[in-house]
Image 1 (cartoon, rainbow, N blue to C red):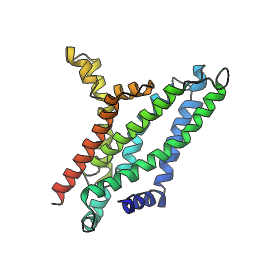
Image 2: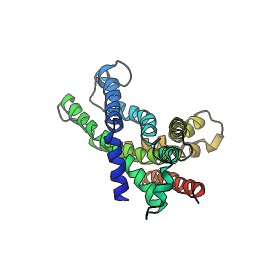
Image 3: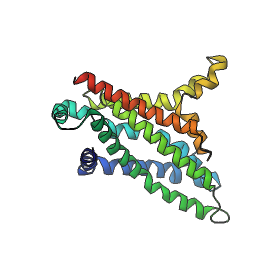
Image 4: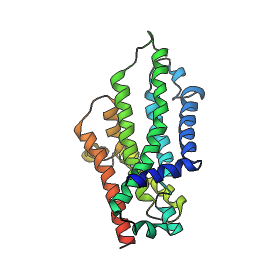
Length: 243
């Protein structure tokens, strides 16, 4: 499996994909947080806080992660190399995990440079160094949980079609629905007393809970469950396709 992870990382950085993913993520966040006037601009807010970044980043990742994962299995299917991969002395579970962790590491690498934002808001604080440590660390942890779940969804979507664009659109839709769909339905009060429970099925409420700096085992188990569920779906789909 380690060799497969290395293969994925080399394929990302052997072309422009890896560099583009990191660059696009940083440029989009940088423009909205520091350049463009609007609700996400930290300088316009008048106080040193990264809450706008943590509101923006999940939406950027909804598009960025599917762009990374869309080729995971769709490319293998289209080129006919999936059958060759399955002849190797490696299980389907290990193949899925190798693809998954390869994409996951790339996204984590894209997040690391944003830690510089902490230094920036620390210097902008009055007095310097006055920033909410618990909330910021909790929000970063929440982003990691989101990345864990989004990547699993993207890898699963890549098994559904040989066409990368179809895989991308499918992953974006599922990520959007899992992040905001349940919350949106609950906001319309379509289910009466069940609305509060319905919102708990979505990632947004759990992300906001972690972002407050309070680690609740229910939130951790939720993200782990979503990630493992879609990884399980991926294994099942591959077993059905190549049994």
